Length: 391
Ligand code: AMP
Image (cartoon, rainbow, N blue to C red; front, side):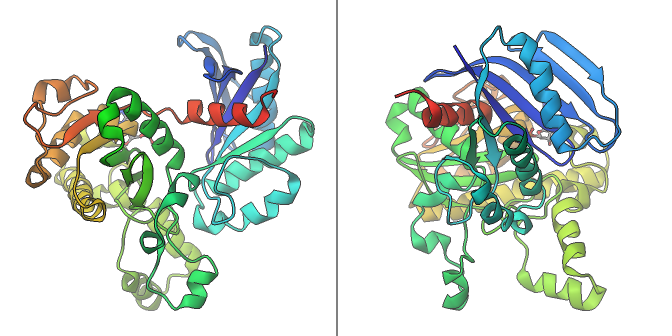
């Protein structure tokens, strides 16, 4: 028996999971190294949630490479000899080049680094961890799974910007993200509602990052995120779709440079920027401040409008699925979004919604509505196993 490690690197954290290597991988360990660059801390638990380790680490020179070494060190004693045979990585941007999971080599790293400006919150950290792994464990397969890959099936018209051709030919187009999550949810929908999975479906991935994906027959047809991860819905700290003229105004009138605009639209906007309080939906729901309510109202309004847009791209709607932190846990957001989609025939069963049952639509609703918890780690473990399994 061997195992597959799955790594999801953020700016100051490295989340990981270890699965038994199998066609249907089974979760064995879950862990996180938080506070990278500040006060690092390692946590490890068993699949059932029982804590195995929770320790502060020495902060000196503690970067993503050190976090990678820590992960390998703390997981090893709990593997019962089931050595790690591959590491699967979430990589946010694969551009037009990488449209399937890939065993990555040093030669691929330069191409992937070119996408750093297009996903600045994630891509540099994703790559830092892969680079450290390639250097320290050159024989260990490193498999990259791309958040863009699921959207490669979109028709060219859904991917196009109305820019002069030389730019689109150079790759300036809509890609779409959260694809690992959408792939997992599409698979689960097939199990939960096989009759609907082939029809017109919108999946709402509402987490700290948020996007919608329109699917037909389980494949992406259109999505709200585009060339970068800042487009589409309002998010925790990202503004979502913005009149491109507003960016010019910010530069001309406020004298902001490109990196300052980047910081504004990726890190200071969204729920955080509008509320002035927090990027976290739980904190906003708990707040009595008018600005918190306004931030939530705008978040919901943007989702409703974009659902309308995707329903138009799909030519109607048969099912709506909520997933990710807010989509899975915040019954109020689901109810508010659904109320705004009544014109599409969406009607929730309030009790089922409050209990976050799998199916939350009322029997008479002409659109079936579901809550399907996402599992990006499992999807990555599956993809990594398929690439490295013995034939
Ligand atoms: P994710 O990026 O998928 O981990 O989602 C993070 C978002 O989910 C944050 O805005 C959290 O506030 C939100 N979230 C998590 N749990 C809850 C909950 N019980 N109620 C409301 N929002 C939640």
